[in-house]
Image (cartoon, rainbow over all chains, first blue to last red; front, side):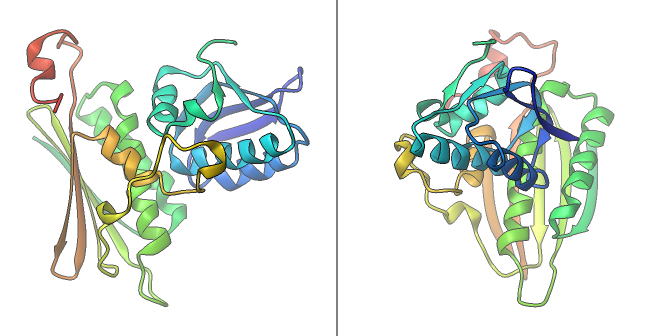
Length: 98
Length: 154
């Protein structure tokens, strides 16, 4: 199960498992958001490299337009994966509500 | 010893079934749920690698997955009958590069190496065999006890 939608405050909300079978849908959704900024991962349970790719492509696009992503409510396990990949150096990632 | 084995065609649509296979092994062996994630990730990365890169034109290889629990170590083996390919030969990505210098992709096998205690590749006859293992600490082991960390820091 994977869900991606826009929250009431304009933040992107992801929930469930962002695996290789869901990453294209996630990227298509994000490409449809003009200037994604905050992405709430409180209910994201799982990510692997196909999911990391979605964040990398989106961060490149948003940065080129002068913005930047902020990932909030990232749980410990998913934070570890972002960190192994060195994404904490290139994306603003907060474990709490930020 | 707990052991399970399954086999699927190397198609992306099989990934959820493989994940379920792993989760069933995990519960049957009464392993701590929080520690399943590293194996779920390793399974996805190595399986998807075969899906994307591992077929002779016009054929779909089969991928066999086995899981074994012995003395607190979980070993997962993926075997496929695709062309010879050692994923461990892939270059290590630069995880310190700036955003502009980051290529899209190339992180999967690197993550597997980070999350497993041991990873090895062998060509066995006409099959690729990738074996990964990791010590799973039971809830009864304290994180600060020497027995829980011995041999895992190297």
